[in-house]
Image 1 (cartoon, rainbow, N blue to C red):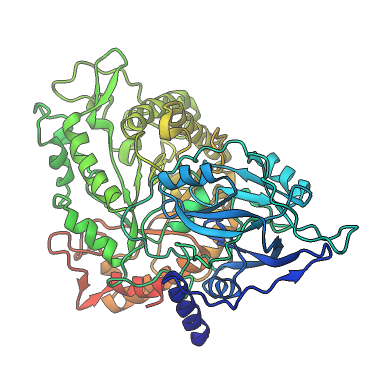
Image 2 (image 1 turned 135 degrees about the vertical axis):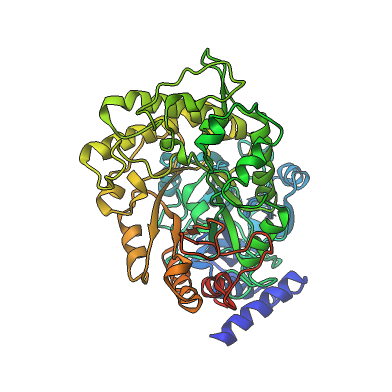
Length: 618
């Protein structure tokens, strides 16, 4: 197997250097008597991108690199109208066109013109239809060689762009027919350059590949979709060079996050996740009820209240280099919202400035960032603690004297109203961020009986009402929020199969919901991950997970976290380790990194490195 991987890497290296591994093109007559060559289709099952090639060397290389070989797409004439192949490294997509003006417009928009892929037959050939879905981050073009597949894609919401070009017909009455005169295919609609969604500018390491190849969203699983292929042998920029697993760069440098409005695409590109715990989620009745005015230090006062230091970019870069490309930032918002007494609510500008500083550091380092409402379902001694000295008034109706929202039926309307107000404010503050930023609705919401973690049927029904309030509020703010991937948490964050199966909302965006559960354990992972995946209604992640330091030795913890990451990779369920900034002691102590020294060592053992070794195969 190593020899095959080495061969693939060598093949891709030669091709990328401008060489060719294929012999001179051999024209094979079809039944029509036209000299032609085979066009093969290969599929990147992670991104949905389709590659069409006439090069047997390129076909073999990308196949060994993990792409799915769909076989022959059609046959193209040796001479005819040239079909250009273009690639967008920012979108991870190929496009094929016979239109020089479209090619030039795409080039100006940042697409790379990889050369002539192959040629088009005359207008009496087999029609190859083009369809597009530019809401997708990658693989947003499809090519169909028959009306059945074309119509299937149209029903799935793809836009029909028209006839792209023509393939050599399989039969004709004249067996001695020669290549037809060059006839330009009808102009496609539209011919303007598609919108290019910005992708991180930093060099992106290959992303993880699920063990079972997921079918790209909206991609039919039957009948390969014909598209174009170059006769020069350009290589897809996002093709792994040896193995589908993310490559090790410096240490385990994590691959960049990919902005997407598709939930499964986000899950596919998430690697290891980490919680910035006990930081912006900190609460204090003493501070909230104090007579202190809001000050320029409000953000850092709360950021450090529970013992965490001020977050630095060095911490963020250290996490990225360790293999984490996703950060969950728990936030307790209630005591940072300013209510003017007339229903107008804003976020304290001093708190928001510090929070955005940290969000931007992770976001600009091309990581996924998750924001939630954390302790806003608890920790309030009275409704008055929502206001601070200097605020004009308070117009909130608490679900209970200490909770803004619960699953209690008696106060569900108030709970949903509070949730909508919260999320309208939050979503508006962040709607300019692209799909690398995700919103998570709540954290471990329960009924008013906080000791009851067992859900009733009513709890689950009301949890869906709360989830719907969140989705509706975010979508209504428009902008990037109209299609942003949103995360719904189960009742109490429980990974109970019944609770997971009950979680459902209606969403105006397509395929834009992720399900979240929490799981803390004192033992091994066994088959927990496969059970979670089997019961989820949506693509799923584990938003909090951990083994406390004080329950085991560092060596045992390293083994447990390694097993966890192996299972995460195998079942394609991202795991976000809970880190409370405590690296020793008997009170929780879930810390993976000393945030002051940036040391990952615990009794001489780097637990995070062990986990990354297991995940990345190091």
